[in-house]
Length: 295
Length: 93
Image: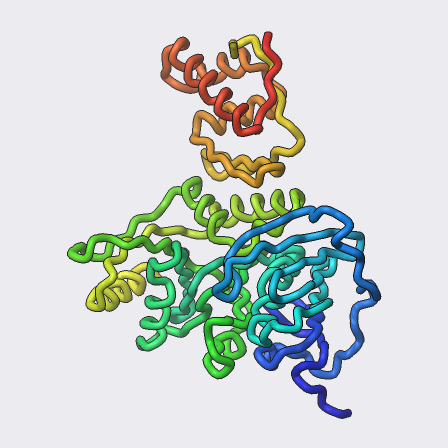
């Protein structure tokens, strides 16, 4: 059989879900399922005339360092998205497929990649009860620690430091897909981390599913303080899961309700800590020791 | 003016979840969340089960050490806030 190029549409295994991605992309090479070339049947063959209807949802946010307004239309087949400067995209109603339907000629391949692997993929996973946390994460022995926090609180710095330490492995550096199961919450780290190069992707070398250990919400403290943590009551953990889930502005009312149920379940199952973090280099080893004691 | 005789209704656009002693409410029309502490969550549980505001007040008085007038004031203030966030609809008595 002739091997398909990376740009050929194909099924991919992403965050534990099998999803048809059209077009394929070099960054998705490690996640391609070779040999499965039949597209899902439910994809409509023609674009609806979106401009004639008001969008069902308009969501604003950062996409590839640009502040964008994403407009969404829904029909029986799925959700159409218009992303200015990129084009139109589509997510199947059951989350089984994402596609680029049209392209703004001036858009760069990198922007198209971020657009397709951004809102359409996040929505597809959510439709399959897999939620994308804005988080970095690292694995110590068998214990997964996810770091949540506002931009600039040090999530990436901490994860980058930990991956250099004995016993630690990087799991995620921007997006961490998670889902509930009968035992609790799991991370599904085989997912493209767009902040990292293809060679630095941690996902392909990790187990497909990792049981969740802990969540740490990072907050910067004064530079002269020592790192400190305290466990949050479950009720106070819910807002963290709500606030740090990617793409919730894309969700329709039904999906928002499912997301709320997920956050309530997650807060009841996963220990969440507040971690005060002075942004100075000598604090990093102290935080590592603190985390290793927690694990 | 809101009184204890008011009838409280939870709109269909509101969904909620309980987490230990707290509750989180979501207005799906506005995509806004609202957290309730222990007493607020218990009130919500009672209202959602069909209890009137007056009956809920009596139940809470039996469960918490609080002056009746103080509890009444707290409940009315909470309900007014919930109403303003579209999380309850209130028919005055």
